[in-house]
Length: 387
Image: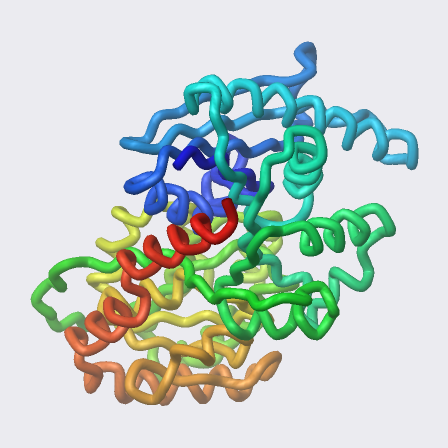
């Protein structure tokens, strides 16, 4: 089957971590299907050209990364012009993908309803190509509520995308029920989880005098609440002077968070910002870590948490949504949202008991729950029913 995967989030030259979970889905699907990815990125750095295209080959997967020139201003007319540029870029990208797929596209797999849904709807109306939708966006969650605050155009596109989708999948039941509560899903949806990379063999455990905690997330404090985690480490370092928190990821608040860590005296002493690293390099850090912490305000899945458990690490995670579907007392500790006292208590409790967790048992749990073969089969079934 020839599949065109459209996504507004995808790793690109400006953000290597953007939508990396979509890329993992794409790599898995490409093992069985002829699949080309098309992602369209607004680029403020383009000067002369209106749009640029990169074509990457990753084993059986082909990626088209399209960049279009960002308008100079942000008024009403400029926004309309921006979406016109987006659509023109998508149209050109479609023709490139069409040739790469031997002039035949059986189905579109849309990831995240907006903005890639603009292109999916256009091809649905004018090329008569059906699409399936996989949704990840936290904006439908009550406590985030970005959907309710979205503009008329964005909400109209999202409603149309859900209405015309041949099938809908979500990465967690929690997300599916939140979307359903907003009246956007009027048919049965399927829960197909994110791909979780799991090592085939865990390293032999070695004792480490240094208490090493890792956290992996986008450095966006409004959603990941990293500042509260920094304050917790500031307090916990007093009874545990060897404690180290290693933060992996990049994002808009990186400079602000580093400054906070400096101001409270823990930067490069107890807290280390490591930037974005590919999974293969992250694994080496996980193998030396004591446990994992995520103080997020909202999660529709959290690949980082699942991969930490898969690498044999117990976790301390907030009750942020979908993580509650697979975190239990045998693999971690759940703490309250926006509660520094609960977070600190959870970390202190984990410091005393992290050595009691069975790493092999943690690895097997994630391997069975998020089996890649099952995920691939579920997508294949979704495609078959949508042709």
